[in-house]
Image (cartoon, rainbow, N blue to C red):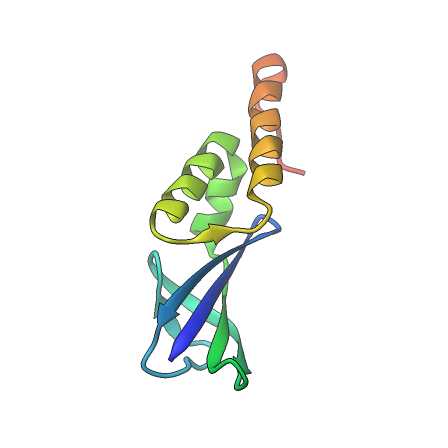
Length: 110
């Protein structure tokens, strides 16, 4: 079964198409870049696929605290086959945060 894994990451969706033997249940763990908990499943019978929404965890949130780490994480996910929605805007915003750190020190996340 074709499945589109969807991970909301800092307000931007990261998606990856995979083959699964069956649609996972909400609360189940799915192996993507690492084991992740399924928060929602939507079946698209017309296309013969499911959209599997994955929950962010504490590791995702920790990476988002530092823009340099967030940028590296995005590059890693892309190398593993994930697509990043609004990648250009996200990277521009992260680069802006990095530049601001040079002048103001550490920036607390908003």
